[in-house]
Length: 196
Image (cartoon, rainbow, N blue to C red):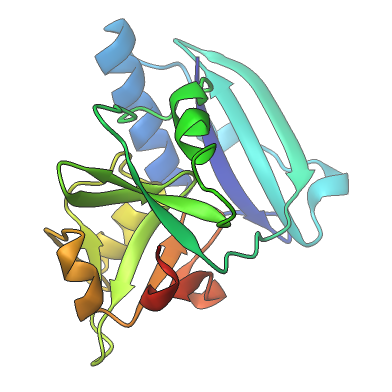
């Protein structure tokens, strides 16, 4: 099973077209068939129309479950570099056991920054965007998951994709975390000195 987590703010869906595109590509790649999902008919329930809400859509070849719940931003003050080995999370699956096993290595840090072959990928729950001293924004070209927020920021030309190694981290002043629920404007991230 796979999942799309969609931001709903005051009753409005965000980046729905990116979620639909990724879900359709996932279904085709994993099942060889088109996903049956009519996003135009999605409705936010009355009780979920105020504030920040997470819509969770679970699917395989069809939509199996849609739930809504209030969302609270996580506070992240430190990240631990963790070797991801051969982890593969190119499709957003409901089974996060490989990511959870890596997260168990955080050793007192708030989250992890996963490394594969010396290159930066993602945290356990987000893509990353590094900011340099001049305000330039860069995302690793070796992400584990092509997140919907990351893709929309790339398409808008707000961030640029490039190789980022562990040694490159010191060239940046901070790392921001982005996912469907968290945007650059939310400022969730840490100074690179807090990456252990």
